[in-house]
Image (tube, rainbow, N blue to C red; front, top):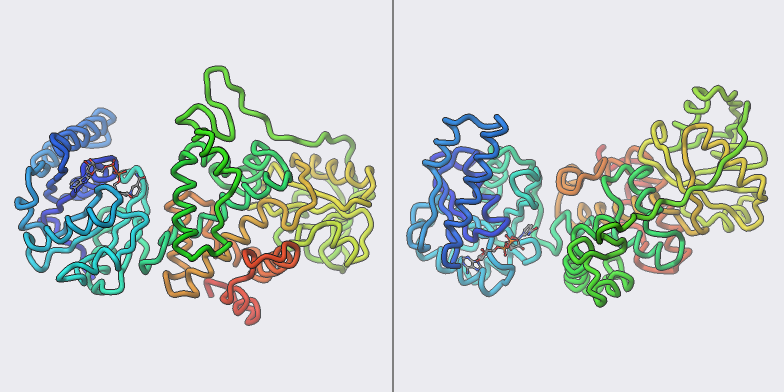
Length: 505
Ligand code: NAI
């Protein structure tokens, strides 16, 4: 499918943060661009803002003067929707209210040519519902940019029930021509990113609620071991708890209170207290002048080993074996079930069972469990936990070995799936549901989470790299431990595991 012709007029309705950003993207891609806002002076203000952004690019030598002049000649504000009669594409980025948006689209339909594509930048409203009152619902599509639109690569292209396939394909091709990374999805609550990302916040909040660890330590684990740009606490402090909590509530409502999306009471408490995060000076952390961010808790290490024994395959953690070799530790390999012996410690990566349960079921003494890391060859931090009958010496031995490999350890309470593993398992599970329900493809789910929220790897590719079975087992153990629907593995994950396949086979 071909992209919208460069000479086609792109109109943007709404000159706020998103509208101005989208207009700038279309302008830099070479289109003539018109901006409309119903607030007096709103469109001119947005145009001035765009010009300022382009000037900064010229100053930084990221744009030539001649291209700047060319852009200026193609950008203008309009005073009425009537001036948009010849637009090829109209992108709406106004207030998030279905009635107001519907009225604007109905007005536009009467003004524009039948071939004009109408797109909405809505992040939460149904494209199907927005199109329902239109004469030509097949011409409406979701074109969901991320903030700030000129910088964020992801665009979710959303098809409602009536959206013509050629319209969605044209918007997909147009987004590529605009140097974006588009993904396709059916109109369902949260689309891809705002749905699949929910457990990223929910699992961390739950861990604090269950007193497993503190926000600073959990954030550090998600960053350094998980490979995420930020942990859930610092990220929601940045987003604003009012905004993040409202999105969670809207997704929870839209999925008929499915417990997978259940909002967190500790976040509600922050909202109730007006502790919205950075913008109000306090959220999980404090941001006033002189505020000191708490340090993650780390266990002290002493001693080290000349020799360790590895029984069987350590699975995702096999990178530790090479690291032991590099650290000058003699590694004795034996058959077995994925255990690492260091002094008294019997160490294993979490499989989703609590240490106390695994020690009893597998008949293991001195068990120390460690968490998943995005890259065991590189990680400098890991969460560990142990069974109540694990000796003090065994705990110290596990900490000492990891320190010898350059890995700091943070002790967390004995919970199923520890920190990174359970969060990743839930991200995979939600991604699998999106694919199972035909909302999007595995490739697009992964692309969306990398390009939209900077995950170190797409969740489904992550499952493939560890083994979908390890994720499946973790979820089954979480479900058994909590007795909650929330953790039930997706049917697609179960099927893939049974068939010995991967998401990207
Ligand atoms: P904003 O409040 O900054 O801007 C909205 C603009 O629309 C205002 O300038 C307002 O005067 C104008 N407006 C309101 N009603 C109008 C109407 N009937 N006709 C013409 N103009 C009208 O809002 P923002 O943040 O730019 O969001 C706009 C849309 O983009 C919303 O649907 C929002 O859900 C969506 N979105 C927002 C993101 C964000 O991070 N802010 C991210 C992705 C989507």
